[in-house]
Amino acid sequence: MKKALVIGASGGIGRAVAEELRGRDVEVVTLSRAEDGFDITDEASIEAALKPLDDDFDLVFVATGALTSTRDAPEKSLSDLGADEILAQVSLNAIGPALVLKHWKRRIPRKGRFVFAALSARVGSIGDNGLGGWYSYRTSKAALNALMHGAAVEIGRSRREAIVACLHPGTVATEFTEDYPDHDKVTPLEAAARLIDVIEGLSPAQSGGFFDYAAKEIPW
Image (tube, rainbow, N blue to C red; front, side):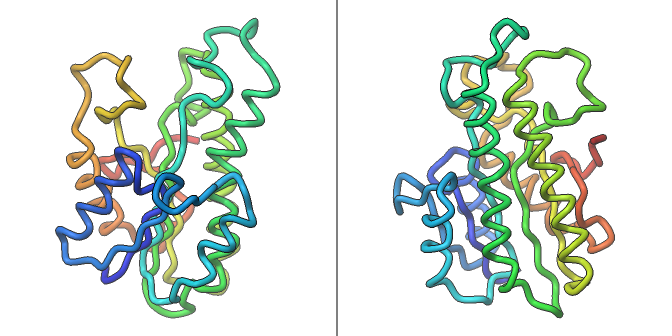
């Protein structure tokens, strides 16, 4: 990789990904709400932010997202379910990254390796869900996975070396996971290094896949 765009670079993982890439001599451009007023839930904001950028990126990494949007914690049961939270989570975690890809598609080279990576989560796996709960967050990540997989099929028809991937970083020690058990957490920089290793190892044949931090495929 020579040049990367990291979206959501003011968050724990996004900031670490940008730092890790720079440590690997990759030129990095960043976008975030905190530093640039970038709003991934607003298509006009996405289009305006991407328009001035050059076309010579070979990685776009979308690290935006949130565990909740209108409440303090994920739903534990159906009795907690509400339409406002589901819609807000899908808008932020699924539709936003898909709109970034929509407005980046024309920039993807027809020849040469290119990767579009979106930060997903294992809890977005329907096949791996044995616990229930977390309805809105799970749904939003499952929707993200579906959108990215569909886009990979479309993009692959004309850009055969392009890769679209959903990545699960593991449990990372950020504000996002401060209430999680401590024993399985890794630092943001450790997570970033693992994710970049996965990206560097992906092939076009794996485009549209859902992978964890060890490059193992996660069931849909």
